[in-house]
Length: 318
Image (spheres, rainbow, N blue to C red):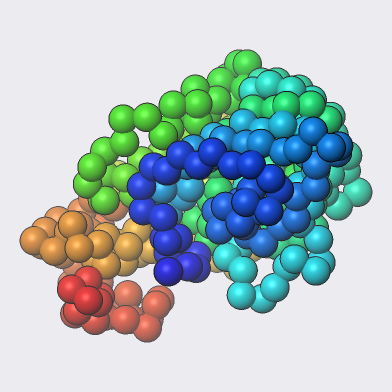
């Protein structure tokens, strides 16, 4: 079983599990998400249907369950766990989400996030129905920390980008593409839509500058394949000066240009590792992500990830 930031868990396609009892649900849910505990509120017993699919590096699960409490506590968290962010779209039934100092009664049609690197609790007092999108923290890049500060805060999926995300999640496990690389691009699209939705929904205590930086990153991620992507163009699209754009990124680890370069290299590396891309020339893969001058690509990959193009191609065949 492969795990990790960009890995795949052991289940490789859609699987429908009809479960009785909390122990069987714990086993399936822990394999999908991370170790957790499940308790049901009464003697009537616990039942659930879990329909899940792996889409590139993300997992989508539709869960219909009778009343229960799901707990991820300090006893459950280990250093070997995959670091996921869970995004739950609530369809039916009363659910309460608790993480950090926040407790929220989530209504149908709302979406909320949980960070599995910290304790959380979900309480379903009656039968509930939800879709859970599990995204590796590494896939969210530098957005992970800002989203992590918004856990257990509901987001509406009735309008705007949230509505698009709601539709996408509701249908994400239907008519999946067969090719692995196609699924990976679908995962990228879901992740970009997710980032855009969170960038478009700011909690009261989030700063305007932080929200703008999130929106800029979401925009740039959607435009990575365009070789004309530049600080000037991004600043123009967001009605700010180039100087202010650079100021927004000044507090981070990378400048805007360095961040774009890193995100492009990250995707080129991923495609070079994909067996489905074995017959695709490196130059064409790089061009997908806006890199048309491949003269120094090998050195850039080596410097960024410690692996050259030939190293990645060899791993591709393993």
